[in-house]
Image (tube, rainbow, N blue to C red):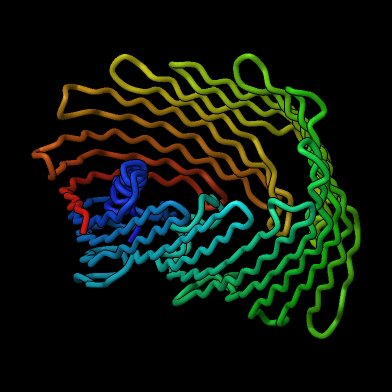
Length: 444
């Protein structure tokens, strides 16, 4: 089920609860959160299809569970959520009952002066078009399951020589899809580094990174990538820090039994300067990719934080063998108002999906407190994906009202409207929703 409009779902609520609870749990102990939300949504042409499809009514009852344990040397966070969904109108006549929107996350962090250990695992099962903001794949049908596990250990942090090693595995599976380009895949990766603590102002590292990606497509594509690198973090002065890393990439891709090899440099050179308010930075990156070839990117940036506003700005230029030269940048402004907040995001970036793609984004958000128990919010977003094969434009608007009915129960209601223009034509989709939610929090 697509959560269109302003998605103020139960999982978002429990994530906010977990974040606030993490802060409250800093004094140690364990905290448990149970969440319950029922959301009723009406939408028309919710997949922005051309020609337009009919109306859709859905009711999702979402249950969530969160656990946070915070002790002196380790922290544990666990969350799980899922929804029982009754939907009428999306895939045919009649009402369909499913259990979906499942998500499980686990993170564990343990730290002592000489070593640190991190473990993360996640599982998510949902509609394909709910996983990312790729405009080109917005109206895909079917479901997708992502699972991932990663671990990292660093030792010798108080010695002159230390070691860091990590490993990760992730898998993506598609079910009942109609797009032949959506193929199951797995990726396994590992890295090993020797860390040299030369002095209080200089730290060096030498290491290896390896990854293998396997795709279940007609070609049985397999890609092995090995990177050798050396890096240095150095304080040039009390305010100026240097971070540099140089490496060499060897990539081997096998399709239909034919092997194609790609080699090239990788470079990252960054300078950070602490200013009286915030910091300034400059970054040069060179990467090598088996699809896109070599890409060079240079950026300058400024981070500024005041009592009422946070500003982050980046401006740069990037060049690739396949795509040519493009201007990129990002501006994010978050301002606190006397009775609410105001946010602005402007972004221009490049990506590669079988062809060069230029992505642009402009988003404006505003929230206002009506009184101690209620608030309103508005959001407006413009997105553009420009490629040789297709140009996509989408405008999304949303307005919502939030009210605390009691100390535990919350009411959210709102409307949304989306307009999309692509190679198929023009599509529109209005949405109306109302939801009731409650969180139960306690310490065992």
